[in-house]
Length: 81
Image 1 (cartoon, rainbow, N blue to C red):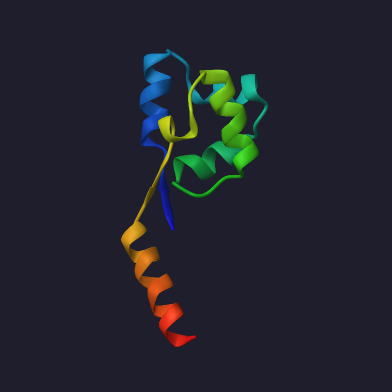
Image 2: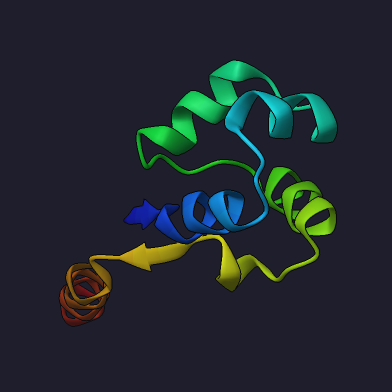
């Protein structure tokens, strides 16, 4: 499943905060930020810290993409069972 953090980048622009400032403020590593930049999954506690700092909900900073592919895979697996 793919994930997009485009909403986070837009929110950071609105709040005038850059990636390194966010890393320092919420105490996340630069490698975690790199994962987000590359649209990879990160742990929910990380997203929780970011949301707390930016005063938003998780849906305000990320969204799942390719959900139709996941749904199709689930359906195919249930047919095989």
